[in-house]
Length: 239
Length: 240
View 1 (cartoon, chains in turn green, orange):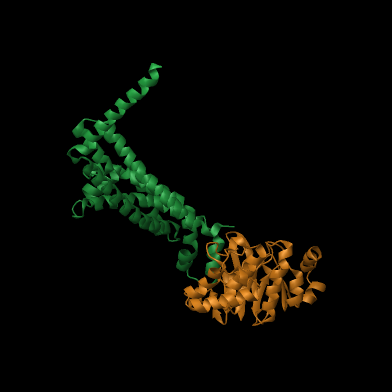
View 2: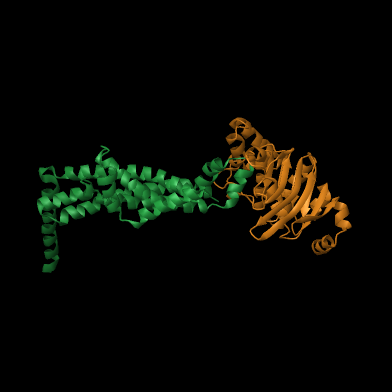
């Protein structure tokens, strides 16, 4: 049949086309360097933001769980504002208004903005995690003479972490994708790099699909490795 | 050792304890019985301030423990507590469950605490479970570990809040045996329980509570066979 020959032939041209666009978009004039720098930027901004976000989230969670009314209020206002406004608006306000004159590195300012954003969501996750631990655990710890903070750190938090680990991973993944808006404040991350290549080559397909694939691979690698960590956390569950 | 004066505890409108006066001497094994909702658990939980009294005073070794600014953690170190639902720490091994508090509170070094843990596990007959996690144990084993965990802090007083109520019947005996040994060793104990046999055998004093007050107090054998109060009579006729 003719068609049996026809398909491979057209596939071959299709592959040739793809290869040509690939070389044109990424290899020529070393345009891939935009992407490698973008990848580094995305990783840098998200990692630092995740770390600070975790710290902020923990503090706000403790505020929200405290029996001091003033701390509750601070925690509530914080989460309300962050959850009630778009992250791109928050990023721009922090970049162009709040920290504009500090002289901090641009990427660091972006990281801070994202950690403030992420902290609000993380705080709710941590709060739920702490509340999920039976009150008896705290009572057992306190009845042994441990202080409230010691009970929290040695007994409640380790158990809570196990329960909330998947939710925290989810938040981290969301955060990585959220950083795709740093182009708004002039940073070149993966998204912006793909955009650059798109506008200089007038090719849309290759740079945008390339951008998507890079994000996908980063997050896939992360999910797999975090999955392994989770398995290790569950070692006390074996029956 | 423990003095309770005019103890009241209210949860909102619910008045659980309505004026309790009680002295517990060193070496006594006080068994507290009464119908559910009579306030016996709340009374016990007030003794180590897991519940804050609404009114009244509690003294341990002549120190008022419900006064403001008292370091309750220091007091709790000499009062062990065993709960109905064990509350072992599921993320820690048996050894870690027992050694956590003595090491964290700098009462013992890690080595001393480990040694203590092995000694106590031998005493409760579970030295082979030292590296297991709580989930791998039966209810009776969990409760014996919980007792060992409390004893690791070398308390002067042990509080038991219905320690056998969550156990399958065939496991009650093994926990009671540990408690009997403890009583014989001279430990001061306050035990909220429904185990009348335990009260009769090792109790030095029985308290019958109802509606947040102590209605009858005295020798367990005497009260169990010849109760004076009508409420006590009614209760015992139902449970014995």
